[in-house]
Amino acid sequence: MFKAKILFIGPSESGKTALANFLSDTTENVGGEYRPTQGVRILEFESQPEGSGDNKSCEVELWDCSGDFKFESCWPALMKDSSGVVIIFNPDVPSHLKEIETWYAMFISSQGLLDNQCLLIAHHKPGSGVEDERLSLGNPSAGHPELLYDFFYYYYSPSTNMFVLYHAASHLSRLPLVHSNLEEEPEDVRQTFCRYLGNVVNTMSESREREEMSIIT
Image (cartoon, rainbow, N blue to C red; front, side):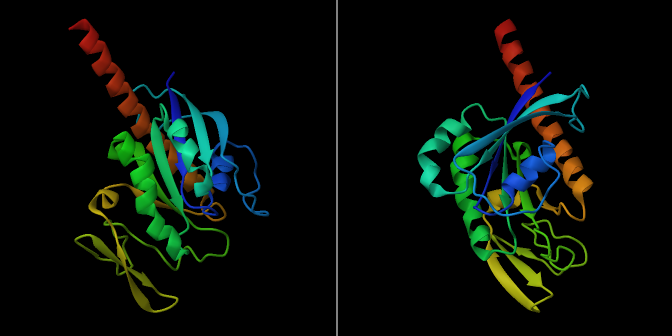
């Protein structure tokens, strides 16, 4: 059985802990008072990856990392031996969109992770109007006028009837971007994570096979 170490990173108050608790069945309460994570929380559970070659359960070690930069000196230790990284942000907070590049550089680019080991989650909190607004980083969803031009993307907000221009580096546009809403689509969130986990497990399996072949040859 594979054991995957997955890091949940992103800005403070983006919903990392709520998603981590839900996926690990730590709690059924997806709301409640905000309590910032101090350093990191480590949650362990088993999950069934979708699309992995052996279709076996996987042991998941989910590291729910604080979004507070005062813990930056600890981040190299948190990254050690990580199998995948998930960047979680609140699309309703403009500063979160600007921070994505920083989190990518610190946790993904520095480790040389492949695109299929990474995931961007736009987490919609209760009452955020997930059905009204959707954003895209180079993969527009149907029904919303979102267009990517070179390293920029336009985000149309029906509630304000305005276009907003954001900068999206090309490497970010390659990463899969999904939306999560634990109130309205909880099982979609779980299935999305299982598909992502399947990609991570396949990458780990291929890496193990290459190491075995190098020993034989």
